[in-house]
Length: 255
Ligand SMILES: [Zn+2]
Image (tube, rainbow, N blue to C red; front, side, top):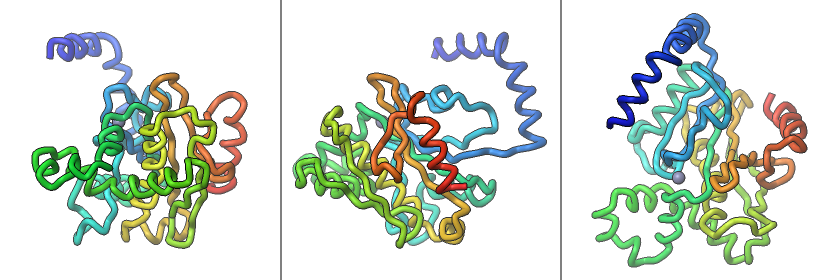
């Protein structure tokens, strides 16, 4: 806690006055650009690696950047993620949702272990809310990953996106740069797009192309950030060579 107190004292003498100015600007003209779902991992600081500022994004974090599928709820407000979607995309009319996964994700490493029946047994789920959370809401990612595993990691996966009819194809880590758990993390990230689209209160916006869902993936080891390109059917590193092509893709498909 001492570290936090010292940080707050430093903030009071440095960033505070600038931030108060920005709060005032945003209050008069709030135009948030994205609802950003990511993992609660302490290494993930999305406002820093996207260089976004006050008023730019609604950030929602949990273990493993999971957005539960609506089928788990009779009403659509049982966990915070659907409520966050409504607050961002309906009440604030935000047009873009971004799901950002990452490498060496402790939640994804645990999800990988949940393939073991003993590890994911009812008794073990009762004593571990994290296992229970992942078993309930991320087993669809695991099933998708197992399709990939069966194909020797070569065949593409097909994911549902904005509507039941809109699907996209994804090759996962064809260069075999990442561990099996990291491959699962990328699959899981893409699976969340279908989970988001499962909510009835977003249906009209999604069908009318007023709301778009994107996937990012952050490599903790190198600091590289990848965007899932539907055109290229894979995660593409965002860098000097690719940014214009990715930007054109986003303009073409999502403007
Ligand atoms: Zn994580």
